[in-house]
Amino acid sequence: MTTRDELRLLPWAGPDGKPCYLSTDDQGGYVSRLADHIEAFQHGMASQLLEHARQVLDDDTEDLEVLRLLASQLTSALRDVLRVATSRGRRPAAPGHP
Image (cartoon, rainbow, N blue to C red):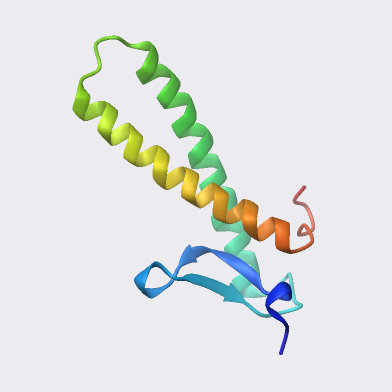
């Protein structure tokens, strides 16, 4: 069994929103690869959402409901990106990932 410092924080939450961890030395295993793909997807979505936010905020005609939706989406994206950043801070970078 590995120590908590060696566990990989996965990019999804478990039941009740609790964090999920992976205990393995195999960075090429199925769950590790799945987590890498989900992290890359979350990063891409956050980048796209940031660009959309810039457009919405530059448009004076947007209504309050659009701004609320944008704030909700940005909150979710920020949560995902912070989870990845926390995970990357706890483990060496995977091959092919900076």
